[in-house]
Amino acid sequence: MTIEEFFKANNKAAIAFSGGVDSVYLLYAACSAGADVKAYCVRSAFQPGFETEDARRMAELIGCEMKLIEADVLSDERVASNPENRCYYCKQHIMSAISDAAHADGYDLICDGTNASDDADERPGFKALKEYGIRSPLRECGLTKEEIRKRSEEAGLPTWDKPAYACLATRIAHGELITEEKLRTTEKAEEALQKMGFTDFRVRMRGDSALVQIREDQHARALDMSERIETAIGGLYDSVQIDEKPRPLR
Image (cartoon, rainbow, N blue to C red; front, side):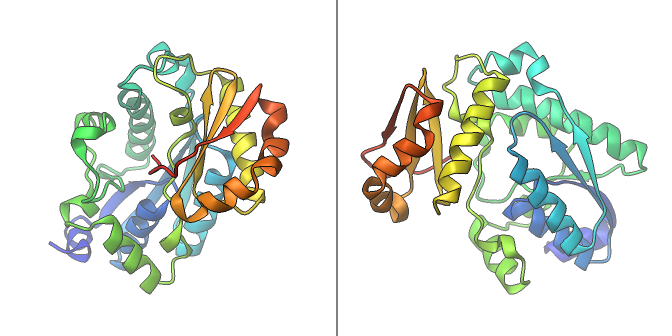
């Protein structure tokens, strides 16, 4: 089944929308197929402000209505305590909020942007998707991340080369309490690196210190600019270290 055929057969759907590569292409494909769709974006403490703004811009570019939903994920101790399966509990909150809003608007089918490259065994959030009956058309139609980027570029979507982004909670080690203060510190640090021209990195919290991890294509530049990086974000942490080796980022 192609993605076009999916939305011809399922021509009324709510889209869980983040403004990232996958959900943007999914929304674009649904609208291009002539389906009755609406985007639902959840804002929580785990998302930096730029992600919400990216989602707004992309929904507007595609020409689809977007509803913004607030979710207080840190009010759940199972999330804030940051266990290994934190993503499962967080995804429960997000999908519950989207389901309630979508059903109230008359949408029975809810889709998300999980693709065929995503490994279900490594992501606790998949369990929550199944529990809420969320469909993943990109995955069902066999579309990999590489293919989605290719199609997005062909469609003129500016997200085609957008770096993958994991929520701010992933910067805090499992078992360490997640607080609003830690998340905002991380957001400020990563915003500072973005202003310096870096696009694919993570600032991990290690106690009161920061470990900056950067992909290979930007790693040498980061090492050359280590003093500038330490100056830019040093006031937020007791110490700042750039990982000596480039790392795959999640």
